Length: 82
Image (tube, rainbow, N blue to C red; front, top):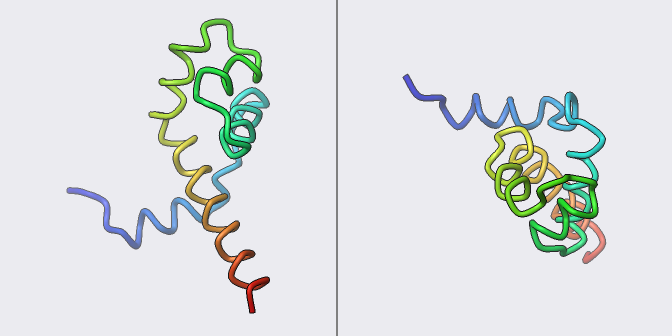
């Protein structure tokens, strides 16, 4: 059976930053700052940034954290526009 969108939503909002390593968090911050996957991985300290950048962008935990942070940014942007 597949997960419903409600289950996925709960999973994403259950604090997606928990369990991420310092390097993963640095990678996410770098992506949000506009870096490419490779540069973000290199700056975060990964040894093989081309491969690791691709792997991280396909990681469920990293995807959930990025979605969460994008949503939070959207909410904040909407509030300041009023």
